[in-house]
Each structure stands twice: as structure tokens, then as C-alpha cells.
Image (cartoon, rainbow, N blue to C red; front, side):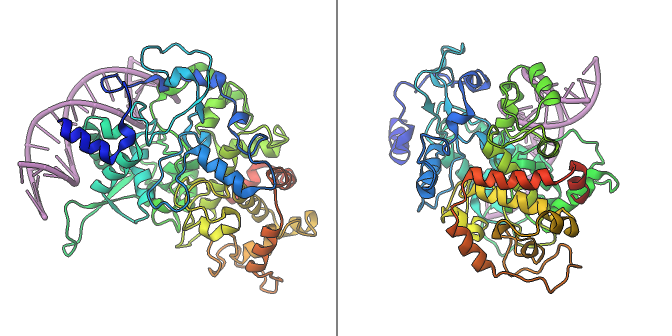
Length: 472
DNA sequence: TCATGTTTACAAGCAC
DNA sequence: GTGCTTGTAAACATGA
């Protein structure tokens, strides 16, 4: 036994945690008391104290470092960013109650913050549901289908907890794959050697991943068979050209046990009465989990109850916008671009928007700028052309070129793909080569604040959420 | 034999 | 209270 342990530690030296051999696992993550000590601003690397504006590469570096992303050059799938508030719903820095051990569940004022890295911390159970873990593994594999063992391996490689845990979690994984209709088994071909079949996410359930959250909605049994509901209508748009969710599966959210939430009634009240984007203490939990409706986001922005993005959970808001818009704009495209909020594998999609990604292989590279860009493009897209010409006689930024968008030159889509949106648009539109746009974009150091200003302009130009919704 | 996959059962937490 | 979601455990079948 000792020998096996020694061998294990030789493979995973980070598993050597002094004094934790027999310690019970800390489940204090179920508490949201850290919220009392957690400040969104303090976790925002773009804020003063970070690398500072005008230094995007260092900003990104710091960002990824703090989020726990693997550095450039590694091919291994990244552990979900433990500190990515938008992605995981967990704080970047947890207060001492969360990580101070199993003896005390009473929240204490945060002492020096401790970064939780699920990849190396065997004591903290990742706050992800098994379904989310499966999706993460599928996404990280970059393959259209994965085997069960691939899922196992990815989870154990990226979550130290499961390396130590009893193997019963694997049973749960299998159970989840079998029971969860979102997962579809792909039988192995006869000429394919190996054991077991492959698994993929059923595209029919793509909208389970709204805002990157694996959401199970309370739906009627015929939700997915009915063709009359608006949900299905919207879903069909989301799924169209979205053959495999692994191309767009996002992992911002946490679908873990709900006991992680704070006061039930408090959250309810916050949801009902407050903007999902206004990071009040009451609704931070939802925001941090990415658990809010996009419609509400637009309602707030468009309705004027949210005058600026500066007070918002930037990452969540933008990644949500980017993700949602990205999916909704897929049309019939085969190369479904992954959502902007994806925390890993920047190769495919972010590779198409490298002007903002700085070629980071993993992480939220270019997230803010790209998300803003996508959201703004969406806003433009949904404005009648005449109205746009009226409101924007001159494009404020080359990236916001409406004609390019109409021609399928959306930066997050393939450059050469034919336009599928508004095909009735005249062909004589003067186009600016995308490469040229890209160069211009690179030359312009668009800061977040500037980006938000642009966003605000477009959003405030839009009239109502209904207008957007009608197009969606 | 073991990994894989299916199914059943139960409990906890939560939304309605 | 009811139903849904999630997690856990277990039994069983199948195939490499």
C-alpha cells in the first residue's frame, strides 16, 4: 500500500498534502459566507493593482495566472479556473473559513486569501455537478466523442479531489451518462478497437448550456418534442448549426448542490427585484454563478436601470453575452464557434479572433473585448438597417462594421463562410477586408472602459428587449 | 476478470 | 406537499 502511495505521489506530487491524510474532506464550500468577504472588484485583474492598462499581454498573463489556467505551451486540459468567478461561481480568493480545515464551519473574517486550485487541492470537492464534469472533459478532449476512460482521466488529472476519492464517483459518472438525456452514446464501430462506446452531448439539449451553465430546467415532459413553444423555437435556433455541444459547451457556472447558495429567500428576492447585473450583495451569488437570464441582462441595459458596466461582474456579463450571442448567431454554420466564455481550448474559436486572444491556448483570452464585440455586433445585427444608418452614419470602430457582419465576416465565425443572415442584403456593400479590420483592431488598444462605452452606445440605442428577443 | 453500461432505489435540497 | 435535480449506492448484464 505504501509502495502504491509512493508511486502515486511520484506521479502526482501535488497530492502530498501534509496532515490531510485522514482528515475528512472539507465541505465548507457549501457555505456562501465567503461572499461577505469577497469583492468582485478585488478579483478583477483589470482593476488597478493588476498589470494596468496598456499592457494587455501582462494583463492576460496575470489574469490566467490568477485564474489558474495552464500557461501557454501546455497541452494538458486545464483545470477549471477555480478563481474564475464568472466561470465557477466560486470566489477567486476564498476566505479562511472555506479553506481553513474541517473543524470549523463558522465563517471567520478572511485572513490572507487562499487560492483554491482544484487541480492540486485534494481536500476541496469541486463544486461542479457530474454532468458539468463530463462536459468539461468532453470539451477538453477536443474530440467530437470521448470514451468513458477519457472522462475519467480528465477528471482525475484536473481535480485532485477525485484522485483521492473513492472510485464510487466513477459509478456516478457512468450513471450520469446513462441517465442524463443530454449525453448520447455513440457505439463504437466494429473496426474501431477498444472497449466501450463513445459519448457526446446530444445537440438537442444544447440549450442546457445557456451561459455556459449546465442547466436543467423544470420542463414539461414534451418540452423537447413540442414545436409550438417559444423555448423550442429558440432552441432550434441555438442548435441549428451546432452539431456538437463540445464546440460550444461552456463551463462558467456551477450546477452543484444548491445548498451552496446562501439564504434561499434572500436570493429569491434579489432575483425578483434587482438587476442581475448589478452586483449587489444580495445577488452576487447568482451573478457569480453566472446564473441569470440574458433577457434580464438586456432588460437592465436597455431599460436604463444599468447605466454602466463598470459596476458589474464584467466577466460574467460579457461572457454571458458573448456566449449567448455566439450561439444564437450560429445559423447553419458547421463550424460552430465556441462560446467566448469557454475556459479552455482557445485554439479553435479564439484562434479565429486571435487579434484579441494573443494566441493564448487556454483561458479567457480576449474574453472581454471579444465578448463585447460579439454583443455589439449582435446589437447592430438586430437593428433594422435603416435605423442603424440613421443612428450610426459612420462606424465607430472597424470591428463593428455591420456590412461585414452581414457578409459573414463575423470575427468569431469563419472568414470565408457565406453569410446566412439577412441574405437579402445587397451585395454592393463596400466591404473592408477582414485582415485589414483585424490589423486596425490590433492597432487600437481598446480598453475595457472604451469597449464598455461602445457597448453602452449601442445598447442605449436599442429600444427594448422585445426587439432583440423578437429576432432571437 | 475487469471495464463499461443500464437500471433501480433512496436521500437531500430546492422550486413551484 | 409534490416533483425535479443531483448524488450515491448497488445489482446486474455485456463485451473485450
